Amino acid sequence: MKTTLQCDFCWRLCTLEEGALGVCGIRKHQDGEMRTLGYGEIVASGVDPIEKKPLYHFFPGSQTFSIALFGCNYTCSFCQNYHISQIGSPYWPGRKDHQRQFPVTAESVVDKMNRTGTNILSYTYSEPVVWQDYMLAVAEQVHDHHGFNCMITNGSFSKSSLQRVLPAIDAFNIDVKGNDAFYRSHCNGVLKPVLDAVETIAATPNKILEITTLLIEGIHTAATVKTLAHQLADRGVQVWHLSRFYPHYHMADAQQTSEPFLKQMLEIAQDSGIPYIYAGNSRLEGWDTTRCPSCRLSIITTHNNPIKARKDVQMNIKDNRCKKCGFELYGRFS
Ligand code: SF4
Image (cartoon, rainbow, N blue to C red; front, top):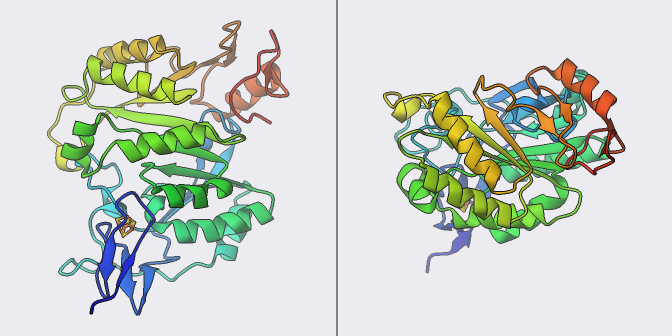
């Protein structure tokens, strides 16, 4: 009789026989246990403004040290980081081997972060859901050193993995990519577990949640965005970034999303009542400004300039409240 093991890292809940890889190509049933291949082998790292994640409501103007291991459980045709998430995996049979890295201990990651002068660590670039065991080991060290953890993710948790990850992460940016048909046709995924994760995180005290949607003109429509806006608003989402698509990967021949289309979608998003709506990959004026939802004061005039953002926070926010009217703002500012 064959023995199988189940992986609960994502909604797929793959059941695997000895030697088998999950859909992600990263998790493997090996020697009687579930293992994460490439554990600790960091394939990308760097120091970025927190706004690049994007996170606009989590210590704006700060820097964050970012890391990634290889892998993803989706196969998005427009992936912006396909070289570290989709191709070149050393694990899939028949794939060309890529250069293996030396595993980095969780303690060493925190040392590196401290040397960069920040105490915010971001798990990003590829999909941390599939390497969450390493993420959690590092996140524990970060909290032990009084730092903060940010997860930039597709949000495709299983229920049990979200409960495991929630205490360790202070701020999430979840990519909500479109409607269910879009997930199935372009990502090899489904929408429901993502919306479930959004709802759970939004309802958890002291967690910051921001949503990003990459808008592909000609695929995403006004009706799609309207429905999505209401689904997010109903789940308590406060911050939504709508970002312009640039041709990439398997969609290199597609048309780039225009500014007028983006503006129309931003206005639809705003009508949903989500209080903080932002444009990404865009030069549209005024759409990277944080305004007080109550008195409309421009609290942070631009998130594209971290120095200016820091000054604006000092000038316009006190104890997380608008200095002009006292309204409590969503996020962590100091
Ligand atoms: S992370 Fe998801 S896709 Fe990968 S093995 Fe686990 S359940 Fe399957």
